[in-house]
Image (cartoon, rainbow, N blue to C red; front, side, top):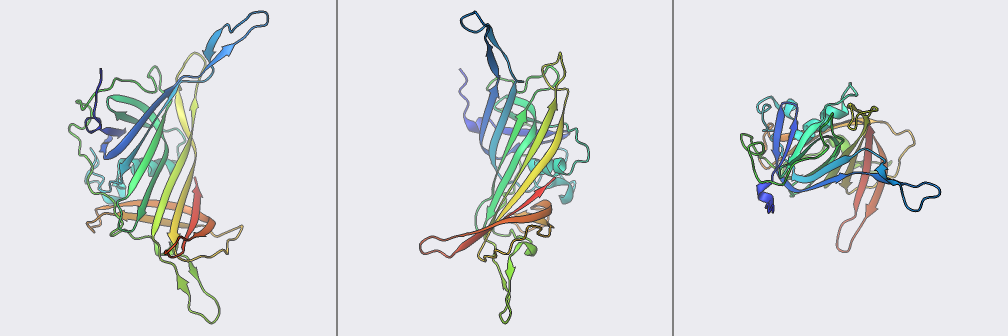
Length: 298
């Protein structure tokens, strides 16, 4: 019987020659096989259950937003190349890919691993708080390789050994948002007002299309099709002057840790984002907080 405590079951992500053992706080693994019963006229009960879709797996986990980028084979490559952690590095690379065919990543937790594609990635940052992130992968399998396989085991020679567990946790202490993100409003005869940003929630999701051929259960390859990116900003100024054809703008988020140093930061570039929503909420003995949502597509 496998009794594995979580501290003995790290999450590892490998992309090409790059590999990182994540500072994960939880991990969920699922594997499904779709079956459909077939019935025939004149016979009671089904003839049998037959596959109705490809077998597919998924793995999702939450982790502390590591910003040093010290994972194998990439440490010291420069801040622009590292992009903080391997998930952020992967997301930035996929959404800007000029080639639709992608290679995916190998994800492993507690001895169970699969080869799959980044489905979603998100993180949040706010004043005086530790930043947390989450990521999910979809596994389709490849050739004769199952989407997910393995048995529950603790740390072995393939996980956590010879790798640098990322250090440097993103925090709101030194993190700043681009000044262009702050809502500004002015009226004739009064001084302009500029909002104060209290927090930001970022997310991106990807769509993938696996290519199957007759005689082969698992896909020959998989194509990245589209991506949708969202940024929700919490501030203290409300402006409802949204337009149908709002001007698009690009922003660079730089998330930092407690050590204010250029090397200890994670950058996310959002291209051609448009504001689509604005709202306000208030609670007892609290100032009115406003939110605005910006989206970008790739």
